[in-house]
Image (cartoon, helix red, strand yellow):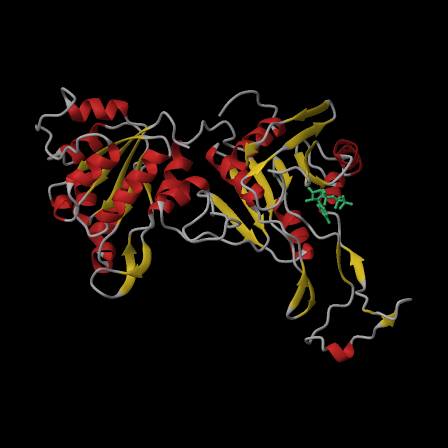
Length: 430
Ligand code: CTP
């Protein structure tokens, strides 16, 4: 969330300006105070009244026009936590690279010392032109963050690079840049998320109800706090991008409520099976400060998965006392990855496990803490409403050597911050 943050949204004259309205609305709903600065040409695409209604502030274009501030470009630069130029045309990028300050947007950009984000959007040839390439390289060298354009349908009718990323992607980048204090910078954190799939044959598999939401919330929270995050993810439903409401509640437009959003600033390794997850964790956990096993890893996998699709006629039933035909699956144990991590723990490495129980939550979870040599177990009772798979909330008990702490019902993002605080021995709010 962006509560208490001030964001300046600079809008220049490209067709993607209409998408900046959705970004403005999302930033407001995320809690930010938003000031919109439009170039003269941006107003050819979207009216200033749209942004004024969405932001609640006058849109300023000319440095000398009257506004609520005495010296507006200096005052706004002083207030800003982040300046985002979206869409940034080739012309605006050239001006920013040269330090030109001939209107309110460019003057304020020059006066700002806060983090800056540029979101280019233009025709592919303008984007590939050496002048634009050099200008962007120069801005990047100066520490300004660039969000690459997408490849997709451009206004001129062809599909090519140059499309402005969806507002949700820009929003997540902003949240990543200024959403939290960076108290985990320099830390490498490996997080597993989602279910595993254990193949019976090429078309069937055994899996579980994990949506991946808790693991993705942890990855987002850790990345926002400055950690270098590797997310090892089973197959999860990903939200489509689109409407601002969706961004704020963590799901995308028209997506299932189970869907997750890929957080900004996170490297993802996709896996399907428990074996693949184990391989990825073993490789990625080398040198990690913390490994968080939030994935719902299958404990059993088919012992003899078939190379070809199994036919009904191949299956041999037994008959039970009531004369019912019973078909048996033969399973073998998977490797317990958290136990492997516990047995190969690197000095100073923190291991966090999750525990899903339907009874004797604390006793069973404490047993896992001890037997798997974990440092922290995040335990939840699957029977409690508001906890467990697929929900946006969780009710967890944090269990370590020193005792246990029950948390109230919290969003998965809030729970994620509490888990990270506990793992790194941090007290306090983020
Ligand atoms: N886990 C793991 N490897 C497995 C199974 C589980 O690393 N093969 C991890 C999970 O990611 C979780 C923790 O172990 O962090 C506990 O998982 P859970 O399913 O609650 O417990 P299990 O150890 O599998 O025991 P049980 O299913 O009997 O409760």
